[in-house]
Image 1 (cartoon, helix red, strand yellow):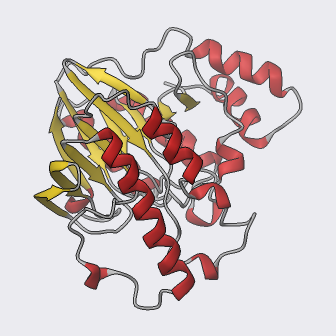
Image 2 (image 1 turned 60 degrees about the vertical axis):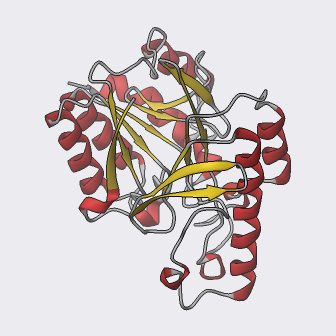
Length: 285
């Protein structure tokens, strides 16, 4: 069981309290020997769509994974970290961490658009290149790539908020939410002509067969334009990575379809948000 002494350095980092450097050293020491992307013994991973700081739902999904013998969950953004209005506060992370420990599960997450980025980036990178925010909860930075068996996986978080006009910068919205042109270019350049097997994203690239009738009816025109530009940017990334499978969240829409894209045949899986079976999918590695 996780005790308060173990949690305290993580809380100090998140709150930017005095003794920050010492807290970083203590936190990283706890996970010094952890390899968060070791191949799961089950050979399977549970993928989850948006959670929006819903701690009860997050805990149920981790318990479900543990009951099913799945020791790894990857959440595809809008985790809600540091978003107090969504419930994604320190207590949210503490509770999820405790549940993950009991269930024997490690949780990895991409960043979406509903994250407190200044809060997230206070946490240092681990030697693996991932960012632990608790002993059992790790952030996958944009563009991070790894290999399981003979298959290459890559994660590209980020999206634009469809409700941005109703949010306040620095309170519940941050411009770091979006994948930038520089981000996209860097990821594309690093592709090394190696085709990605599975690409995990928060947003959906332009090529994804989305049902546009499900998009927000009260969407401000400026946010619609920004969202379309972001999807185009992500498609440019996909043209460089040429993924065979793309799994995403963000659009709160569950579907699975294989289509011909600008980079070849690709299977798309979209996951719904917290609250129903459509939020998760199990993939064999």
